[in-house]
Length: 192
Picture 1 (tube, helix red, strand yellow):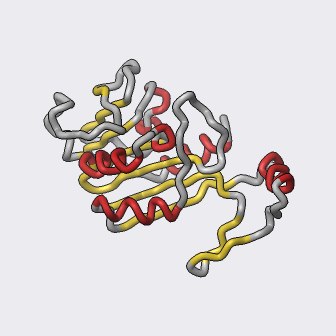
Picture 2 (cartoon, helix red, strand yellow):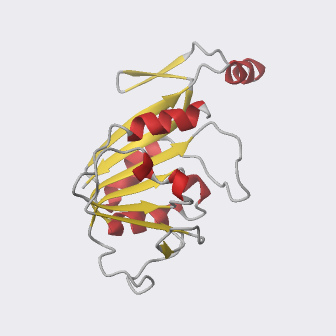
């Protein structure tokens, strides 16, 4: 298992979905569902993806405008928790994706994305920064945004920095916090 996947699973193990209505966006195959790692039993667990995987409840493209008529699902707007894990980098229309996620989320949206990561699919389009999340999510009703960094001490990343003339030890200071050049992605908890 990759270090990135291991960090994602460790992050999910801290989340309790007991008694909640949950939507898993971009759920994919059952072995990738967030429900495999989070704590507790939800009241309801719904999955959807852009393509049909076994067990996926609904098919919908997160890039498209959602008007409420596209899914035969009555409670699409009432999910207390929404997961969107390792999905946004595959969205060619991320603002529309965030708008849709906002409509689907009643309380908390969990997002995970890579930052420094090779292209890993034929539809791998974008990478997002902390600043992007802090600017975009409040525009769609998310008032509390907690961002956790995924990091690595990979010698490959260190080699790349050296080839680019950068030093791994170099820090960037923002808002009094040190950002090391070891960040490989983010976990976002956005609350309404």
